[in-house]
Length: 332
Image 1: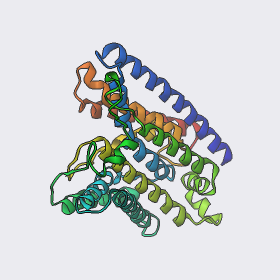
Image 2 (image 1 turned 120 degrees about the vertical axis):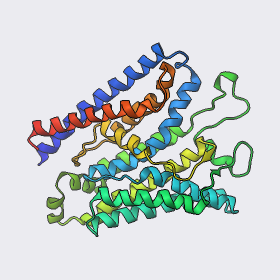
Image 3 (image 1 turned 45 degrees about the vertical axis):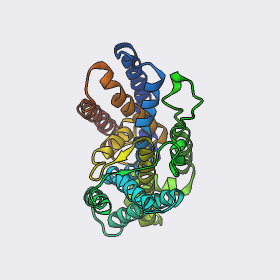
Image 4 (image 1 turned 60 degrees about the horizontal axis):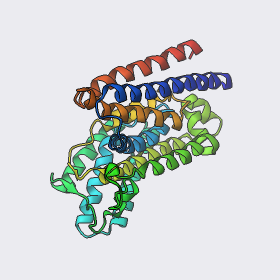
């Protein structure tokens, strides 16, 4: 078993290296062929696109490592923010609203975890149901009306500076702001990488993906740790919702469907195996930035953003094919 994990880890390292090369190649391609791409405001746009995808991807990495999937993170991301924004408009202080957004994400993550680990529902079906519930709940709470978070010098707008700092003294060529959210993304990525690779919960979550039954027979509480993976996914989906609200002016009910595909694609492109047992937060971030560069760069070469779905589909198929080929090579 240890040799199998070692082979998987080596294969993941190779895929991560390929992902790094692909990320650099994409950036160079858009810089050369995309008129106006290589400038400060575009780099900020790449970071803006990476935040909400990145937070969702970090969380869902833990679920995919267990061999599961979480399809609800996209709609949960928006649902949490819609509820938080509605509460703020009703007079709840922004700090309290942000905390409640995180709590709501954790509660839905817990519900997903219990449905999968206790009730025995397939993760695909359980989280598909939660996707529909959260998409509808956001519309119900807001009455299908859009929600706007405070901007500029308005009371409560302070949280936006966590993700993009735009003081008046910035020079004209930096008017797009300072992408401070990158610091938060990297710090949380480091923390979660340590948890995954250096702590008992992380090792148990990795073990679940390698062989769930063997892990259970060894005395590990698989229900507890599988549920924890979904809770982490829910919490990070909620954090993604906060970052999305910080970057975008208005949130629309019924949206968010499709965000999960970008996040899952980033995870897979970064080398995490859909069969479970092996994963890397660093690889996930690389995959996320590939997605963000694609999303930002395509319009600069004359292609509309919806082409991202078309291209991402091909990239995802190639990444999954590489994973399947590696597993066949290892005899798994």
